[in-house]
Length: 359
Image 1 (cartoon, helix red, strand yellow):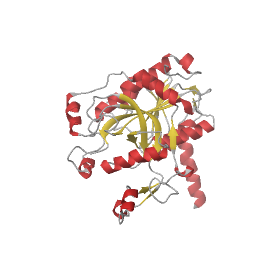
Image 2 (cartoon, rainbow, N blue to C red):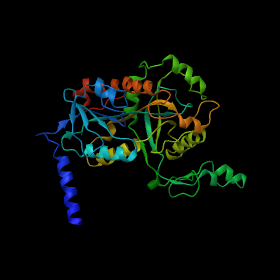
Image 3 (cartoon, rainbow, N blue to C red):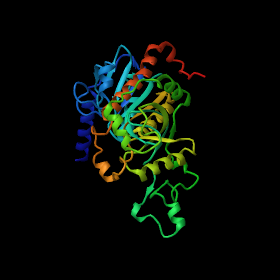
């Protein structure tokens, strides 16, 4: 029976991979655009993160990708490749690793642009804003006790136990120093991030009247600003968390894990998985980690409106019904394509030389 099962699995795998035709020479890719979810088809219906890129970058060639979440999309003329990883760090890590090991592509000079939406901290940004991530920090790896069981018997305990989330290998929240094997933190190439920010900081972002009215319902020093482009840290966790207390944890967690160097701005659900796979692919000389950019745009705030409970806010926070869902998708393309187009247009130089920010 075991032999039969093994043979069956081998047969299925062989059948799946037979869909892939390996070219005589690998296709040199200039830019990989990484999206995480799509609502329906890749084109022609209600958009998710992938659709605007497929339609507007003319990623018309469909390449079978059975080892990943979704078929790839390519523009053979420009060398822009689109990948849809699926939601969550596990799917993202698996899909990106599968792409990096795919013999059809030469990714050694490719730039990677992760372009997705997320929940923004109103202390840092506003709805439909764009955040170039300087740090990507994992929010999954650790210990946790139910918040209802947090020690609260003494003032010292109440001061120490501000959360039930404890770093791996530690005994209390934010115990110093962070354990290296419990610290998944990725700092993106500062010069490349600065270049992307400078190139796009004056891009006009969508700010419809309903968005202008909506943001007034939230508190925070940046909440009422029109959408803007800025830099900040991304807390990546597969759990979709929400609320004022969780936001405070996110701000403290990012400070703790980056040694005070990163400032939490926006959250996502995949980017540590993507960054981990790219890190190991770079170690195998398959990609260049200095060519990776992560852009997250604000589809919603990570806290409720003024006077609303976290539970009620979360109940209304559903995919495609986020407060700034469509504007955030628009922002991701408006800002991201400026970088993609620059790289493609200037490829003879960008291939061998990383762009640098203006001094």
